[in-house]
Amino acid sequence: MSFSYDTAAELFPAAIRKKKRTGFAYRRFNTAAEAVRFAMEDLPADLLNGAYLQVDEARFDQNGIRALYDSGDFPLQRRAAKAEATADAA
Image (tube, rainbow, N blue to C red; front, side):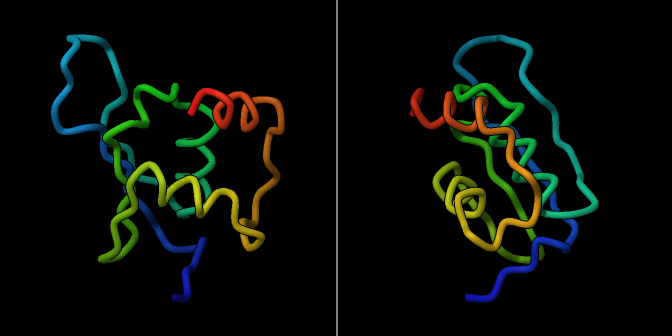
């Protein structure tokens, strides 16, 4: 499967939240790479759980977003400390 990190993307929060807590709202990004980095580096793990990324007609859940982030093709620089903390929490 060919994936373009340059394509616009949308990040949607979990449809149902058990806790009434301020989470994140729908966000649109100019590139999928920015959306993936935001999801992996800026969102707490509990908010990423149940969220999904839509790029064109493809949808990616938490595991799919992680795979895109971990890919050798990921074009942006990663913030190592936050990425490792997120991986340890999962």
